[in-house]
Length: 338
Image (cartoon, rainbow, N blue to C red; front, side, top):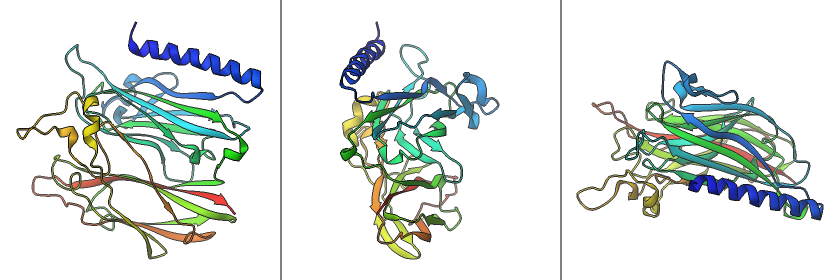
Protein backbone atom coordinates (compact mmCIF):
# COMPACT_ATOMS: atom_id res chain seq x y z
CA UNK A 1 0.00 0.00 0.00
CA UNK A 2 1.42 3.43 -0.94
CA UNK A 3 2.61 5.99 1.58
CA UNK A 4 0.01 8.43 0.29
CA UNK A 5 -2.85 5.94 0.83
CA UNK A 6 -1.58 5.13 4.31
CA UNK A 7 -1.47 8.84 5.07
CA UNK A 8 -5.06 9.32 3.93
CA UNK A 9 -6.21 6.36 6.06
CA UNK A 10 -4.35 7.76 9.08
CA UNK A 11 -5.97 11.16 8.61
CA UNK A 12 -9.40 9.55 8.30
CA UNK A 13 -8.86 7.59 11.52
CA UNK A 14 -7.63 10.69 13.31
CA UNK A 15 -10.63 12.63 12.04
CA UNK A 16 -13.03 9.96 13.33
CA UNK A 17 -11.41 10.06 16.79
CA UNK A 18 -11.52 13.86 16.82
CA UNK A 19 -15.18 13.89 15.80
CA UNK A 20 -16.04 11.43 18.58
CA UNK A 21 -14.19 13.53 21.14
CA UNK A 22 -16.01 16.68 20.08
CA UNK A 23 -19.35 14.89 20.16
CA UNK A 24 -18.71 13.80 23.77
CA UNK A 25 -17.61 17.27 24.86
CA UNK A 26 -20.43 19.11 23.11
CA UNK A 27 -18.01 21.43 21.29
CA UNK A 28 -18.32 22.05 17.52
CA UNK A 29 -16.49 19.61 15.29
CA UNK A 30 -13.73 20.58 12.85
CA UNK A 31 -14.90 20.75 9.28
CA UNK A 32 -12.93 20.13 6.09
CA UNK A 33 -13.98 21.55 2.74
CA UNK A 34 -12.32 19.68 -0.13
CA UNK A 35 -11.96 22.01 -3.12
CA UNK A 36 -9.55 20.16 -5.43
CA UNK A 37 -8.38 16.56 -5.25
CA UNK A 38 -6.05 14.91 -7.77
CA UNK A 39 -7.08 17.46 -10.41
CA UNK A 40 -4.80 17.79 -13.44
CA UNK A 41 -3.14 21.07 -14.40
CA UNK A 42 -1.79 21.14 -17.95
CA UNK A 43 -1.10 23.39 -20.92
CA UNK A 44 -3.21 22.61 -23.96
CA UNK A 45 -4.04 25.94 -25.63
CA UNK A 46 -6.67 24.43 -27.92
CA UNK A 47 -8.48 22.53 -25.16
CA UNK A 48 -8.58 23.83 -21.59
CA UNK A 49 -11.23 21.20 -20.80
CA UNK A 50 -9.04 18.18 -21.62
CA UNK A 51 -8.95 17.00 -17.99
CA UNK A 52 -12.22 18.49 -16.72
CA UNK A 53 -14.29 16.68 -14.10
CA UNK A 54 -17.96 17.23 -13.18
CA UNK A 55 -16.89 19.63 -10.41
CA UNK A 56 -13.62 21.15 -11.62
CA UNK A 57 -13.08 22.95 -14.92
CA UNK A 58 -9.91 24.03 -16.68
CA UNK A 59 -9.17 27.54 -17.96
CA UNK A 60 -6.26 29.42 -19.55
CA UNK A 61 -5.21 26.43 -21.62
CA UNK A 62 -5.60 24.14 -18.62
CA UNK A 63 -3.12 25.92 -16.34
CA UNK A 64 -5.95 27.15 -14.10
CA UNK A 65 -8.42 24.93 -12.25
CA UNK A 66 -11.76 26.51 -11.36
CA UNK A 67 -14.44 25.39 -8.97
CA UNK A 68 -17.45 27.23 -7.60
CA UNK A 69 -19.03 26.01 -4.38
CA UNK A 70 -21.09 27.27 -1.49
CA UNK A 71 -19.46 27.22 1.94
CA UNK A 72 -21.85 27.23 4.89
CA UNK A 73 -20.97 29.75 7.61
CA UNK A 74 -19.44 27.90 10.59
CA UNK A 75 -21.68 29.60 13.16
CA UNK A 76 -18.86 29.81 15.70
CA UNK A 77 -15.32 31.21 15.88
CA UNK A 78 -12.85 29.24 13.79
CA UNK A 79 -9.25 29.05 12.73
CA UNK A 80 -8.93 28.30 9.00
CA UNK A 81 -6.01 26.32 7.60
CA UNK A 82 -5.47 26.07 3.84
CA UNK A 83 -3.78 22.83 2.77
CA UNK A 84 -2.41 22.64 -0.77
CA UNK A 85 -0.32 19.93 -2.42
CA UNK A 86 1.22 19.62 -5.88
CA UNK A 87 2.58 16.49 -7.55
CA UNK A 88 4.35 16.22 -10.91
CA UNK A 89 2.79 13.68 -13.26
CA UNK A 90 5.24 10.88 -14.12
CA UNK A 91 6.25 9.88 -17.63
CA UNK A 92 7.72 6.60 -16.39
CA UNK A 93 9.64 5.32 -13.38
CA UNK A 94 12.61 7.55 -14.20
CA UNK A 95 11.19 10.97 -15.06
CA UNK A 96 8.23 13.34 -14.82
CA UNK A 97 6.34 15.47 -17.31
CA UNK A 98 7.49 18.83 -15.88
CA UNK A 99 10.91 18.94 -14.17
CA UNK A 100 10.97 22.70 -13.63
CA UNK A 101 10.12 24.94 -10.71
CA UNK A 102 6.86 26.69 -11.58
CA UNK A 103 5.05 29.63 -10.04
CA UNK A 104 1.70 28.64 -8.60
CA UNK A 105 -1.09 29.61 -6.28
CA UNK A 106 -4.60 28.90 -5.10
CA UNK A 107 -6.80 31.94 -4.97
CA UNK A 108 -10.29 33.14 -4.21
CA UNK A 109 -12.41 35.13 -6.63
CA UNK A 110 -15.20 37.31 -5.28
CA UNK A 111 -17.14 40.00 -7.16
CA UNK A 112 -15.93 43.57 -7.05
CA UNK A 113 -12.33 42.95 -5.99
CA UNK A 114 -9.01 41.58 -7.20
CA UNK A 115 -8.33 37.86 -6.81
CA UNK A 116 -7.00 36.96 -3.38
CA UNK A 117 -4.04 34.58 -3.15
CA UNK A 118 -4.97 32.08 -0.47
CA UNK A 119 -1.63 30.30 -0.84
CA UNK A 120 1.21 31.47 -3.08
CA UNK A 121 4.01 28.99 -3.81
CA UNK A 122 6.61 27.81 -6.29
CA UNK A 123 6.71 24.12 -7.15
CA UNK A 124 9.84 22.08 -6.65
CA UNK A 125 12.03 21.00 -9.54
CA UNK A 126 9.91 17.96 -10.40
CA UNK A 127 9.15 17.12 -6.77
CA UNK A 128 6.06 16.81 -4.61
CA UNK A 129 5.23 19.56 -2.12
CA UNK A 130 2.58 20.13 0.54
CA UNK A 131 1.92 23.40 2.35
CA UNK A 132 -0.30 24.54 5.21
CA UNK A 133 -1.08 28.22 5.73
CA UNK A 134 -3.24 29.86 8.39
CA UNK A 135 -5.75 31.95 6.43
CA UNK A 136 -8.07 32.84 9.30
CA UNK A 137 -7.77 36.50 8.30
CA UNK A 138 -9.78 35.66 5.17
CA UNK A 139 -12.73 34.30 7.17
CA UNK A 140 -15.21 37.03 6.09
CA UNK A 141 -14.78 35.93 2.44
CA UNK A 142 -14.47 32.15 2.92
CA UNK A 143 -18.20 31.67 3.27
CA UNK A 144 -21.15 31.62 0.89
CA UNK A 145 -20.73 31.53 -2.89
CA UNK A 146 -16.98 31.16 -3.54
CA UNK A 147 -15.00 30.57 -6.71
CA UNK A 148 -11.59 28.94 -6.22
CA UNK A 149 -8.77 28.86 -8.75
CA UNK A 150 -5.69 26.64 -8.70
CA UNK A 151 -2.75 27.67 -10.88
CA UNK A 152 0.62 26.25 -11.93
CA UNK A 153 2.55 27.99 -14.70
CA UNK A 154 3.33 24.77 -16.56
CA UNK A 155 4.01 24.38 -20.27
CA UNK A 156 3.42 20.63 -20.55
CA UNK A 157 0.35 18.43 -20.88
CA UNK A 158 -0.26 16.82 -18.53
CA UNK A 159 1.84 18.67 -15.99
CA UNK A 160 0.85 18.55 -12.33
CA UNK A 161 -1.87 17.35 -9.98
CA UNK A 162 -3.23 19.57 -7.22
CA UNK A 163 -5.14 19.12 -3.97
CA UNK A 164 -6.72 21.95 -1.99
CA UNK A 165 -8.63 21.70 1.28
CA UNK A 166 -9.79 24.22 3.85
CA UNK A 167 -9.82 23.05 7.46
CA UNK A 168 -12.16 24.97 9.80
CA UNK A 169 -11.05 24.44 13.41
CA UNK A 170 -13.33 25.68 16.22
CA UNK A 171 -11.65 28.00 18.72
CA UNK A 172 -12.74 29.65 21.93
CA UNK A 173 -14.29 33.09 21.52
CA UNK A 174 -11.45 34.56 23.58
CA UNK A 175 -8.94 33.19 21.07
CA UNK A 176 -10.78 34.42 17.97
CA UNK A 177 -9.51 37.46 16.13
CA UNK A 178 -11.58 37.42 12.96
CA UNK A 179 -11.52 40.68 10.99
CA UNK A 180 -14.67 42.48 9.98
CA UNK A 181 -13.56 43.35 6.45
CA UNK A 182 -11.31 41.91 3.75
CA UNK A 183 -10.82 43.32 0.26
CA UNK A 184 -8.66 42.06 -2.59
CA UNK A 185 -6.66 45.04 -3.80
CA UNK A 186 -4.09 43.82 -6.37
CA UNK A 187 -3.42 40.65 -8.34
CA UNK A 188 -0.82 40.83 -11.12
CA UNK A 189 1.08 37.94 -12.72
CA UNK A 190 3.40 39.94 -14.97
CA UNK A 191 4.50 43.35 -13.71
CA UNK A 192 7.29 44.46 -16.06
CA UNK A 193 9.29 47.56 -16.94
CA UNK A 194 6.83 48.05 -19.82
CA UNK A 195 3.74 47.84 -17.60
CA UNK A 196 1.63 50.99 -17.24
CA UNK A 197 3.63 53.35 -15.07
CA UNK A 198 6.74 51.12 -15.43
CA UNK A 199 5.72 48.93 -12.51
CA UNK A 200 3.98 51.77 -10.64
CA UNK A 201 0.28 51.12 -9.98
CA UNK A 202 -2.17 53.31 -8.07
CA UNK A 203 -5.52 51.91 -6.94
CA UNK A 204 -8.56 53.45 -5.28
CA UNK A 205 -10.01 51.95 -2.12
CA UNK A 206 -12.77 52.93 0.31
CA UNK A 207 -12.25 51.83 3.92
CA UNK A 208 -15.64 51.10 5.54
CA UNK A 209 -16.83 53.03 8.59
CA UNK A 210 -15.77 51.72 11.96
CA UNK A 211 -12.43 50.21 10.93
CA UNK A 212 -9.89 50.95 13.66
CA UNK A 213 -7.02 48.77 12.44
CA UNK A 214 -6.22 48.02 8.81
CA UNK A 215 -3.38 45.70 7.75
CA UNK A 216 -2.08 45.12 4.23
CA UNK A 217 -0.96 41.64 3.21
CA UNK A 218 1.61 41.91 0.41
CA UNK A 219 2.89 38.88 -1.54
CA UNK A 220 5.71 39.25 -4.04
CA UNK A 221 8.03 37.04 -6.06
CA UNK A 222 10.58 38.18 -8.64
CA UNK A 223 11.36 36.27 -11.83
CA UNK A 224 13.11 36.55 -15.20
CA UNK A 225 12.41 34.87 -18.51
CA UNK A 226 15.92 33.47 -19.03
CA UNK A 227 16.76 32.30 -15.51
CA UNK A 228 19.58 34.75 -14.87
CA UNK A 229 20.08 38.07 -13.16
CA UNK A 230 17.29 40.49 -12.39
CA UNK A 231 14.61 40.26 -11.27
CA UNK A 232 14.98 36.75 -9.87
CA UNK A 233 18.47 36.84 -8.38
CA UNK A 234 18.80 40.57 -7.64
CA UNK A 235 16.66 42.18 -4.97
CA UNK A 236 14.68 45.33 -5.77
CA UNK A 237 12.95 48.04 -3.75
CA UNK A 238 9.17 47.77 -3.42
CA UNK A 239 7.56 51.04 -2.39
CA UNK A 240 3.99 51.34 -1.08
CA UNK A 241 2.25 54.69 -0.74
CA UNK A 242 -1.06 55.87 0.69
CA UNK A 243 -2.44 59.11 -0.71
CA UNK A 244 1.00 59.93 -2.14
CA UNK A 245 2.86 59.33 1.12
CA UNK A 246 5.41 56.51 1.38
CA UNK A 247 4.30 54.11 4.10
CA UNK A 248 6.49 51.05 3.43
CA UNK A 249 9.66 50.14 1.56
CA UNK A 250 10.82 46.52 1.41
CA UNK A 251 13.04 44.13 -0.55
CA UNK A 252 11.59 40.61 -0.94
CA UNK A 253 14.42 38.11 -0.57
CA UNK A 254 15.05 34.49 0.50
CA UNK A 255 18.52 33.25 1.39
CA UNK A 256 17.50 29.93 3.01
CA UNK A 257 16.63 27.92 -0.12
CA UNK A 258 19.22 25.20 0.50
CA UNK A 259 16.95 23.64 3.14
CA UNK A 260 14.53 22.59 0.35
CA UNK A 261 17.05 20.70 -1.77
CA UNK A 262 15.54 17.34 -0.76
CA UNK A 263 12.20 18.14 -2.44
CA UNK A 264 13.91 19.23 -5.68
CA UNK A 265 14.95 15.94 -7.33
CA UNK A 266 15.54 17.44 -10.79
CA UNK A 267 17.51 20.54 -9.87
CA UNK A 268 20.86 20.90 -11.64
CA UNK A 269 24.32 20.83 -10.11
CA UNK A 270 26.65 23.40 -11.66
CA UNK A 271 30.40 23.17 -12.28
CA UNK A 272 31.16 25.11 -9.10
CA UNK A 273 29.38 22.45 -7.03
CA UNK A 274 26.28 24.53 -6.29
CA UNK A 275 22.73 23.33 -6.91
CA UNK A 276 20.16 25.43 -8.78
CA UNK A 277 17.57 25.00 -6.02
CA UNK A 278 19.97 26.48 -3.43
CA UNK A 279 20.35 29.98 -4.86
CA UNK A 280 18.90 32.94 -3.00
CA UNK A 281 15.99 34.51 -4.84
CA UNK A 282 13.63 37.49 -4.83
CA UNK A 283 11.14 36.41 -2.21
CA UNK A 284 10.86 32.68 -2.94
CA UNK A 285 12.53 29.26 -2.93
CA UNK A 286 11.79 26.32 -5.24
CA UNK A 287 9.44 24.00 -3.37
CA UNK A 288 8.23 26.44 -0.71
CA UNK A 289 5.29 28.75 -0.10
CA UNK A 290 5.50 32.55 -0.16
CA UNK A 291 4.01 34.08 2.98
CA UNK A 292 2.53 37.58 2.99
CA UNK A 293 4.35 40.54 4.46
CA UNK A 294 1.98 42.23 6.92
CA UNK A 295 2.04 46.03 6.97
CA UNK A 296 -0.03 47.86 9.59
CA UNK A 297 -1.65 50.84 7.86
CA UNK A 298 -4.15 51.84 10.54
CA UNK A 299 -2.47 55.22 10.92
CA UNK A 300 -2.96 55.99 7.22
CA UNK A 301 -6.05 54.05 6.09
CA UNK A 302 -8.76 55.70 8.12
CA UNK A 303 -12.40 55.15 7.08
CA UNK A 304 -13.15 56.74 3.73
CA UNK A 305 -11.58 56.94 0.25
CA UNK A 306 -7.82 56.56 -0.33
CA UNK A 307 -5.31 55.97 -3.12
CA UNK A 308 -2.77 53.17 -2.64
CA UNK A 309 0.33 53.01 -4.83
CA UNK A 310 2.65 50.09 -5.59
CA UNK A 311 6.01 50.53 -7.31
CA UNK A 312 8.93 48.19 -8.04
CA UNK A 313 12.16 50.05 -8.72
CA UNK A 314 14.43 49.21 -11.64
CA UNK A 315 12.70 46.21 -13.21
CA UNK A 316 14.99 44.70 -15.86
CA UNK A 317 13.74 45.84 -19.29
CA UNK A 318 13.37 43.58 -22.32
CA UNK A 319 16.73 42.98 -24.00
CA UNK A 320 17.57 42.35 -27.68
CA UNK A 321 16.94 38.62 -27.20
CA UNK A 322 13.47 39.31 -25.83
CA UNK A 323 14.23 38.43 -22.18
CA UNK A 324 13.18 40.58 -19.23
CA UNK A 325 12.45 40.63 -15.52
CA UNK A 326 8.98 40.58 -14.02
CA UNK A 327 7.14 40.33 -10.71
CA UNK A 328 4.12 38.37 -9.54
CA UNK A 329 2.34 40.55 -6.98
CA UNK A 330 -0.81 40.48 -4.92
CA UNK A 331 -2.19 42.47 -2.04
CA UNK A 332 -5.27 42.62 0.13
CA UNK A 333 -6.53 44.74 2.99
CA UNK A 334 -7.79 43.30 6.26
CA UNK A 335 -9.68 45.45 8.75
CA UNK A 336 -10.84 45.14 12.37
CA UNK A 337 -13.43 47.33 14.04
CA UNK A 338 -12.63 49.74 16.86
